[in-house]
Length: 237
Image (cartoon, rainbow, N blue to C red):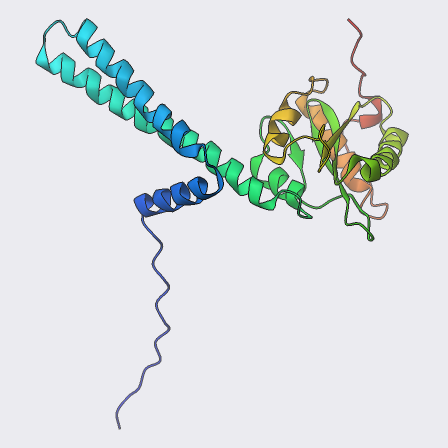
């Protein structure tokens, strides 16, 4: 009797690095009309600088001339990748802007430099799907309203009352991401968070975050350690 074997289908092969870069470039160009010009400038700028240095500093030596040009090309490629990543991120955020959960996606993927947050909102309006997100960092607590300011402001005020009730000395900042003219564009949210004036040290950030997280755990004990309610408020200058 012939023996039969069941073989699982091979997993699809992931595209190579160059193909991935090309796909990112195509996506970025599709949603960002200015991307191609920024990318050309990013690449050609260092190349031109390399050529200029080659003519001025090589002293007629062929090896030095070639090395300056190679350095310019490599520098142009590096700057090209940096600009491509930023424009691609901006294009990706532009596609989800205005959708419920867009702020959570940004907080999950783009926070850095001492800020922590959850992609899940701390408050949601069942009727309008407006939401409030919370981030904790060196600037204290940031409450981010997702939706029109006229509808989210009262939600942010309610969350601030909950925070100041247990953390009276921790500053709370309101940020708005929505359709209003004064709202923060989605791709600029991480930069706006980092621009908030620092008032807390790293141990205090952890203590504040733990205290706030305990609010959503149905009265579970607060973690031991520093008492966040004793965090010092910033001294006036």
